[in-house]
Image 1 (cartoon, helix red, strand yellow):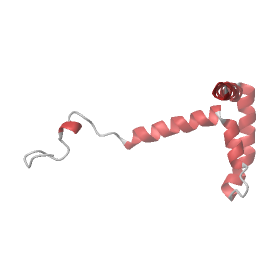
Image 2 (cartoon, helix red, strand yellow):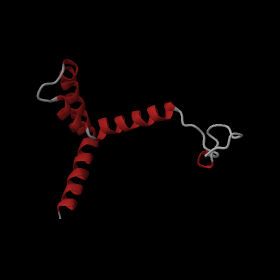
Image 3 (cartoon, one colour):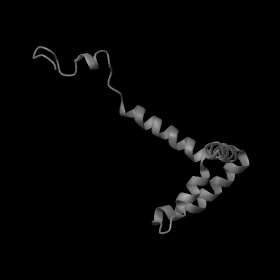
Image 4 (spheres, one colour):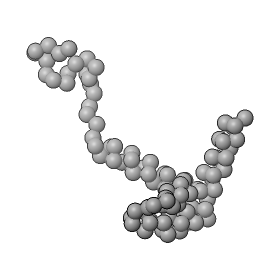
Length: 93
């Protein structure tokens, strides 16, 4: 516990630590979403085909199908599917 003479946030656990910026979290989230859009484009198509999608999700279905087609032609979707099958095969043994 901090003594009265210590400033708040200067306990031993926090010594030499810098506060992280929210920009870092946003950048990491953008990278993760981008990677998922490229490598798991099939998941995006499946997500847009929900039983009762809202108007925004329903409007995204056609672009998601086009995007998935591009990812199949360019290769990342095929690479992801092959890796997924190999992992599932290894886990089932």
